[in-house]
Amino acid sequence: MSKGVARQVVAARLPRELAREIERIAAEEKLDKSTVVARATGLYVKQWKLERAIALYDEGKVTAMKAAGLAGLSIWELLEELERRKIPVRYTAEQFREDFEAARKE
Image 1 (cartoon, one colour):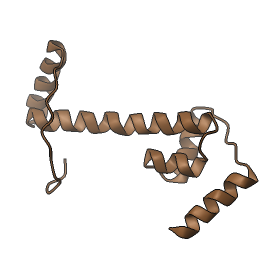
Image 2 (cartoon, helix red, strand yellow; image 1 turned 90 degrees about the horizontal axis):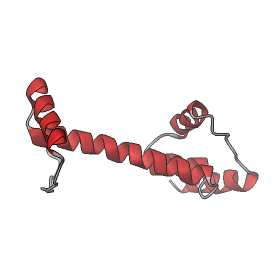
Image 3 (tube, rainbow, N blue to C red; image 1 turned 180 degrees about the horizontal axis):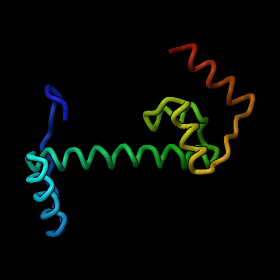
Image 4 (cartoon, rainbow, N blue to C red; image 1 turned 180 degrees about the vertical axis):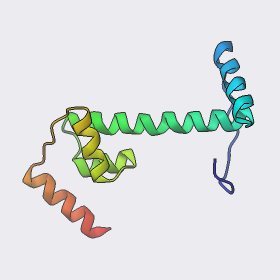
């Protein structure tokens, strides 16, 4: 994780086998267990945000631009992910206007 980033202690109960895997990875990577857990958690959060954003987009609840923002991706990265998952890109004129206005305000 980045130096200088504020950190908070979070306790978690893990299955014994998962704790052993964390210890094994930490030893192999020459890291402390806290760093391994923080990196794994970061990857999970990133993936969760992507899955949530795509689900909202696929349900028609958000535009592609909004989904990209929720996932922490550029619009182009999101469109590539939608294509990879074979999710059709739906973009109405109204959604375009919404995204255009939102982009102008940034």
